[in-house]
Image 1: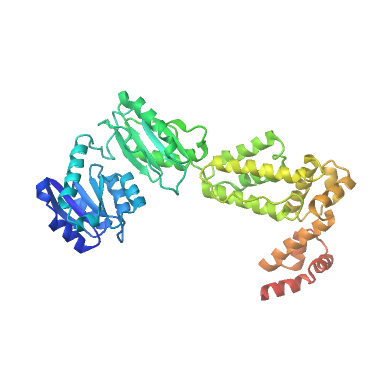
Image 2: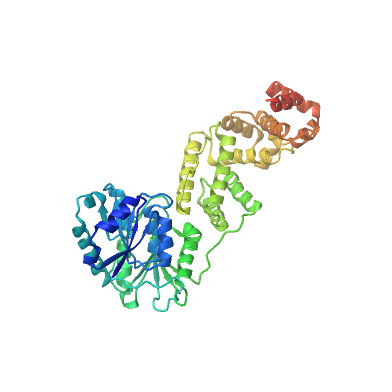
Length: 467
């Protein structure tokens, strides 16, 4: 006897289906009802069910969410979808998740009960002969030498996973997460499974086929969790659209990133701003290696890139060196590096619009960073030009042309800008602030501040805090 559960938030629909359809004629019996997905899962825990009819649009837990959970927990459960409107996208998603059929409720209104049940019974009978009982997640894998995981770096789109690629009764297949599925097959069937998965790669965006070895003597739960962790860490950096198949051993530890040290982050920023990486391959490779070595999580990496872009545009957006655009989203390190390459090309293009060589442009950028990072030091154009091995007059000319200000004008400007931050955000004395931005004479500092802002430091603080 096929035991049936009906799930619909409309009580009249549930009662109508339960009482009106000729279940006995097709060896079926309604054993329960549920008004939403959560209650359906509770029922499945307590009683065996062979066939579940579920609505898609329900409160608390939708039919799609219910199907995802039920397919994971009860792989042998047959699911038929009830739909008020024949919505193609919803129906396709339901079929992708393993529904064996769908019933438009208008069919029931036309009293096509016998035809509907006949169709469902035929499909269940056909599937019963081919679907093998899936192992429990706590069962140890002893028969399968490899596990194949098809993973997408795209977390936003819904994918059409090639779930039914073989009909071999000993095949294992599970949805690991929304963006990944896994398969296993007996040794004699592995080549066929691999080639079919490889041929299906085009169906999934940003895809990688993982071939896992050393999977025996592990529970299926351990294997699934390893795939999830690998996708979150190592695969983020390993993904490459030109190399879509990756062989990996479960004995390899996933590279989990620790909280990055400030000095490591500063080292990358220094390489970005003070080395000619945009024009020289060796410096570019050094910068890329520094990024990769930190193994930053996506959020950490986004924060670092954001701070670099903000600082660059703060320093150079109003100059001939130009601004750079932020990368707004990425799913892999491959996309980040593509953005870095495009940024390098953009910087080279801006540099090419000046009459100066890349070496001179890099020297001016380095001078800007030196002054920015140590405002207490009273740098001069003469001292910096000597440090950068450029004549003073040529350095002054290059600096003004590229930055739009003479070195002395720029030096005063950034010191006053920093002092504004101190005035508004600290209660320190004017003398303390003057020292922090490179002025040992408080009166001279106040005079420079008033020349650039029209206010004395004390007036600026009072006015800024008042507003």
